[in-house]
Image (cartoon, rainbow, N blue to C red; front, side, top):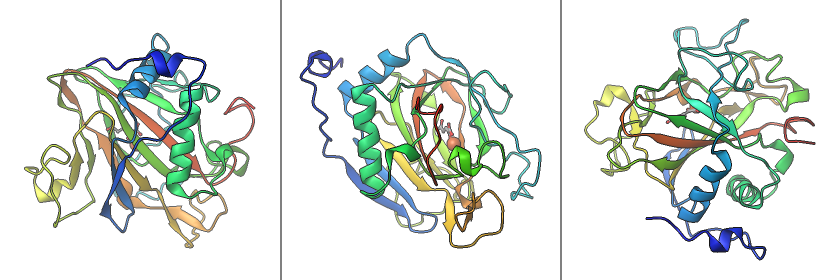
Length: 271
Ligand SMILES: O=C(O)CCC(=O)C(=O)O
Ligand SMILES: [Fe+2]
């Protein structure tokens, strides 16, 4: 179903937040599933904005200390898309202009969801990620395992929270779920939202459902160990390890909304 784009493109566009619903999946780590976080018209607009601008996704590997000793697949991304290609991430991605009114509206929604006081300057530009059949993003954390170039205070420190939003899921898509292997939820299962048939040991797999989103907190508050907390008294939460499982058929476009501990700095959000 194609949504009408007239209202979203007209000059009298107004930012309105849809009546999404939030469902607590896990207290610790904090994981919240959000239904209808973005509207069909917004999804169409985001895809149009990204059209023709996708390039091979980048991955940042931490060359210094890693806090994920027993996980050889702990790669963090954040590089410009062309900077460092890696087989752990075979998707294509692009960033969206913060100046676009629809992008800005979704940013506002993401900020309000976390706490009304979260400044816009802490947001990285929204990133679309596109997967064709056979493409995936191997297990990783969104938080940076080593402070430095990507998590320094001048770059906003570490990634405090993540939203992964399902923007487009082609009809007949198989695979492409978002798997959190260390998450255990025994008391809730909603077929169509999570893969209820998956082995307990496999953790939780969120199915890609257009318009819906998964939100989680990347950092454990108040336990500084010097690993990428950006000086904020926080450290990365290993339990937030996750993967974009291979798309087996069809196609998927997702969107990352990352909030840093501090302002991301000029030049990243376009000043
Ligand atoms: O594709 C997914 O389901 C997850 C992607 C992801 O984790 C990321 O882009 O950081
Ligand atoms: Fe991720």
